[in-house]
Amino acid sequence: MTDFVKVKGHTNLQRDLNTNAVINTNVSDYSLYMKRIKTRQKDNDKLKNAVREINNLKNELLEIKQMIKEIVKK
Image 1 (cartoon, rainbow, N blue to C red):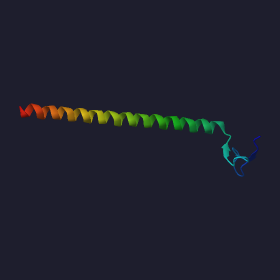
Image 2: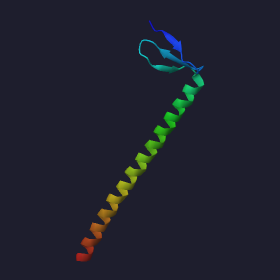
Image 3: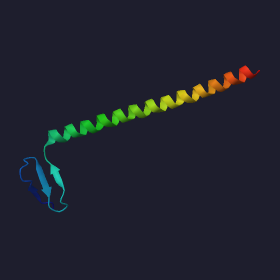
Image 4: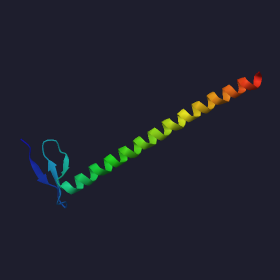
């Protein structure tokens, strides 16, 4: 059984007496929070993909450089 008590001075916060956790009961704040989390995750994914692509391009340039060196040696 879960018991909640309102947090003094905050209309949308309640404290769970069993776990001592503070819970935000404002649904719109939670939705906004989750939207920010998803946006941040998408941004992180884009950055990871860009870094991966840059590393691939670096490797390809190194291969081209090595091929050119081989051609010049001959």
